Image (cartoon, rainbow, N blue to C red; front, side):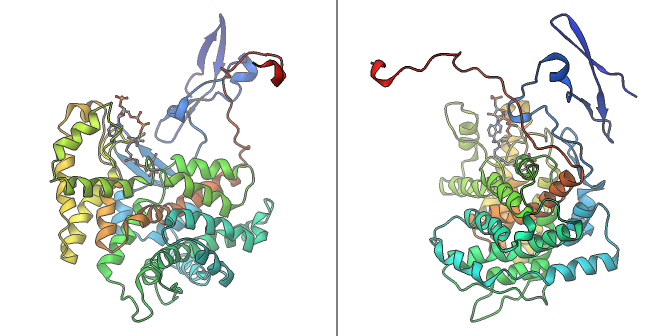
Length: 429
Ligand code: SDX
């Protein structure tokens, strides 16, 4: 049992308990710090602050390790399926065959969204960013299922809400794309698997149904597995914080979508492809862009590089990089930006600026190349990230509810004006 941490403040010593995780991670539990000492802690961006204890995902940034419920991401990406991983994350164990079949069948039976929701899509301009549409329609599910608003609803009702959002999110996402290109929406067909159905809804036309290509289905299934959870990242922390007020699951997921949208987070996959296209259009001079990324006077960053936790290779990037070659070869596609991405990685990883700051390719650096190869348009890339992250968000929200965690409400240190009296406008000069 590790000894308590000792903190001396203004000559007085305080003992704070130490928490040790499964992999021997250590934390000082400051739950009672303010009661004991009147002090709080300050940690902009929560770089050193743990918000919770969790049994879902373990990642070791120094050693490039990522495990879902203890299973290494490399094994799951190679041998599992996205729906099986979703079950594992949400319910904690790999499903038996009958459990997975029941989970799959329940989802297939809930893929339709209320016909009245179709009108929402017609109200958006065709140039609307799909993330704005998807987040709004996802939140609107709470208006069609008001029973989801009851924080004290029994778990079988919560599980129905979980099934509904897992089943309907691909439909909501694909309809945003159908609408953005002025095509009629494609209704789900329950003969298809989860990923096949999404591809069908994305790419079928009134004139011809999309034939799911196994290479594409497998590649997308693997990408979704790799995005499924990542412990307390920005969007997942948002889902937990919103849910901690007893807000409903649909609204919490919608909030997660908005947090993910930012280019520093899930929006990076779109920004990476735009960056690689810019470098390609500019003659492929990767050194020029590496220098720009290092220049503090230049706002340009190497998108898809760096990570708050990984100070070594992001294990997901390694898997996706390999899958890039595999998928593009099988599809007979040569995308010049893949060569540029590899060259950029090679040059950056030999540059002192990146080495010193431990900036490696992250999950977003190569993923867009595969999305583009399978026909996903760039402005749908972050929607694809959200589709993958959905089971992780659900699992983390469920864990927060099961643990009866308190409403999240951080403290602050006030540095504004001291007390002063009101002055009438006439006297303000
Ligand atoms: C995701 O948290 C998660 O788990 C997220 C995620 C998930 O699965 O949920 O993994 C998904 O969001 C991946 C990250 C995608 N974002 C990008 O690729 C955008 C580019 N990367 C960065 O903006 C940055 O690396 C962050 C936002 C990812 C991390 O930023 P931090 O941890 O706050 O680090 P920082 O910005 O303080 O950077 C430290 C130093 C700074 O230089 P100095 O001030 O020390 O001189 O590194 C530099 C930064 O300027 N730096 C970069 C850089 N990333 C960091 N310089 C150039 N290019 C970059 N990409």
